[in-house]
Image (cartoon, helix red, strand yellow):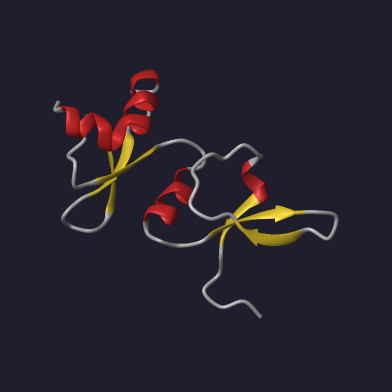
Amino acid sequence: MTKEQIEAHKEVIKWFIDNSDKGVWFKGFMNEWKLQTDPHFVEEYLYVQNDEYAEFRKALSDSKTVQQIYGADCEWKDLGWSDKFTYPIENYRIKPDKEN
């Protein structure tokens, strides 16, 4: 593995070292997400860890908006680009294409 590969995917690599039995999701030249149990961490590919938040990590990588529920009014607010999910999974959603 090259220094460039490590630098490009260091967070997912770090997670994979501790969770190799779960694999990682990757998106390569076919432009579709696939689960891989023996990743090569190619620089040009996208990788996300295969944890309970994988759906949201993939959405962020696909330039979709993830929202988190906030406040007493329980309003959905855009999370922005972050994969630091610190709340229970039910506090997140992928922003619907069209909100009423």
